[in-house]
Image 1 (spheres, rainbow, N blue to C red):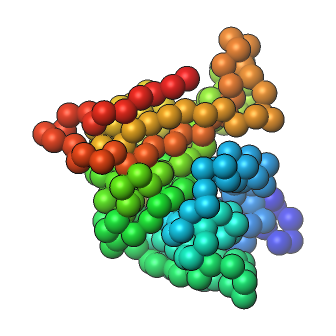
Image 2: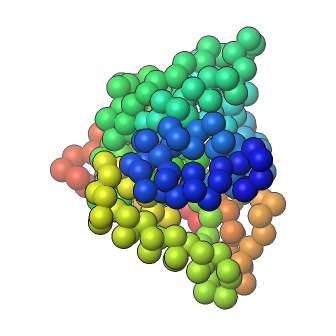
Length: 257
């Protein structure tokens, strides 16, 4: 990570103390040489799980970053793929990274996921590693935006991983990171925040259903199981229900474990 192609400790510090938009603009040229991107094993597993549900016509990569999920969508969608992100710097890298010569048409949009400029435009929306930038109170609005961007019957899919327990070094790494981020957010009050421990699956499933999305949970094989037998990796698949939610009440749907 601190090799010749990756960011220096100083660069990461400056990025962490910036707003998320400006921070990612700074980090973008070296982002793919950090451990922050979505591993290929996760992308391949999600693609394999979604393939039998297609083919899809138009896909959206929400908070696309440097385009890893956008590239995945080019193998699943026939007509068009769109990547949307807050950071112009990340989009610049994505434009160079994702091939456009063959396959579906690829477009890039700089925008806020909380105010998407789309209505019933996609039958598949995916997102990878972006939810640490949204506070729990923002999830209802975010999922309502996703529902509006989906066509009836369209799906919103994203992987979720079981958090490490206190015996795992990763638990304390995440805890320490979040503590630093809370101080950062309180002092600098950036327009976009960054956390990693606020995305609770039970709350997410509830808010998806309230937004009018019928939810199913799949298992991503290859990532093993926890000591209690539960899978370490799941795929959330939320389908746009035919009837819009009324008065904030959950729409008809099911949650399958």
